[in-house]
Image 1 (cartoon, rainbow, N blue to C red):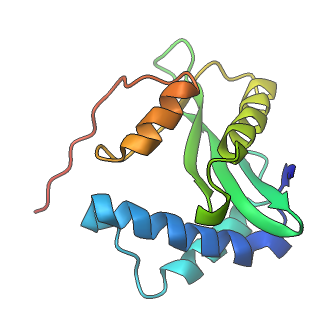
Image 2: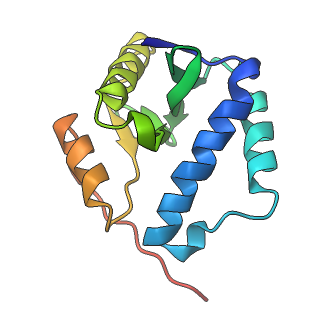
Length: 154
């Protein structure tokens, strides 16, 4: 297995992983139902950010197949806090056939190194409330819940 920086040549495979990932998220919250062209928009977003120094997109490659990815960024709060910059993990996904092989851990470890190189002291991310498996993973990575996010349709 190789953990490496994603390239534009990887966008199609990453997008397929995103489809698998977001369709699972939809099971927990219908708000995350993909738009008909959601995969196209996601691919465009990846292409825009793949070379941006504030964005970090890693892939886990096994025998030429993209088995997982991690999509993260350096973010910044207004300068009202002592440490306004923080890392944010937007998506991390491993395709079903490659789960439980330690791939997500390796993607996270490499992402953590990148965050540290950028001088960050904390990381945030979102997990669907009912996704016990994701909660368990992030807790193993040293995360704890520090804020609840509320949602309401209007």
